[in-house]
Length: 435
Image (cartoon, rainbow, N blue to C red; front, side, top):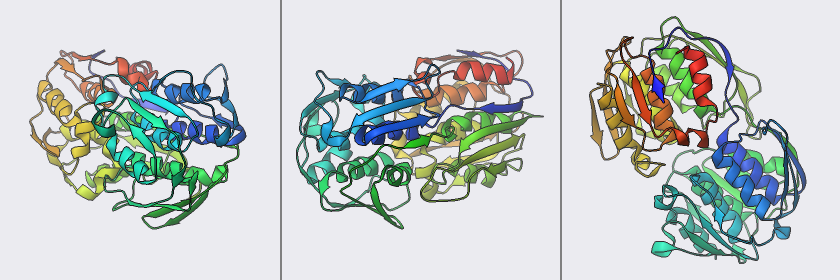
């Protein structure tokens, strides 16, 4: 992908459906008896891996022509069948970790794997608590990474402290708890994404939420109808594009506004992003996914020290936050983000390397980075960067590359994986910046 200086961005755009919610719509719809209808689904590579898995488990799935509307007809959790071959989850950490929780309580044997990147990512964080519930899961390093063999068995509920501050760990345990004996409780030191907890009651799941404690009870889910709002993490790239481009006026329509996902707005407001306007379309509720429009224009940003307690709810947005920090005045410091080391790539190393190619002074820490911003009219340098096959690094550097001087060009390698979360990104990006 090649990027040149962009021009004034304006108009109204819609980003694809939320990836986290799309995964969960398939998982809960696949576990539920009867018909589930989903609109706004994200037909990305990651989500299609989850779709394929449930099809192999005996769920009938029919997609409409545009692939964003689908219908699932499931025999229910106890009617799922043993797959006839290995389930390959590609690059999707969400799918592989959540499906561990689903498969642990079945009555059959399953083998799970993924691509080279996913096979390097830690799985013991879900395998250990599931084993405490009685799950029989094995793989390299006693279940430290894929491939994993899951021998479905009867499970028992547990109380678990989620020290990893991970919504994937929490969700895997809660999904297993739906078919365990007794209640299952997960407590967190900080609030993480709560899509699973919000969606479960829609399918008839029994959930009790008390502050940072979530308890599920054995539940037989039933099919329903649901809509997937636009993905805030995908909208963040165009949000940043509007903030960084002089003269811009951009409205992002139908974006998910779940407060456990919109932490980037809090950070940007602290950086003096004065042009942000949030227009909710739904009233606040713990049992639905709020959404609305976000209007953004150019702002002159200021660097800040990001509080470590904000990190869990901006973990996926740190690459695009780094792009914003590069165009801020002063230094932005991000610490407490060691989780970035075990994402689709080592994102700390990847971000620092990319920024250095663009001429942005930065420093790497074991758990984060510091970026010395070049100001609202940055004198960036072109060149070639390696995204490490990481979709979020690739898209974030494309946004930053749009602020290059007219004479410079940025080449981004490894952009094929953008389709794991944002199919059609390049076309929409080029349309908006008019490169």
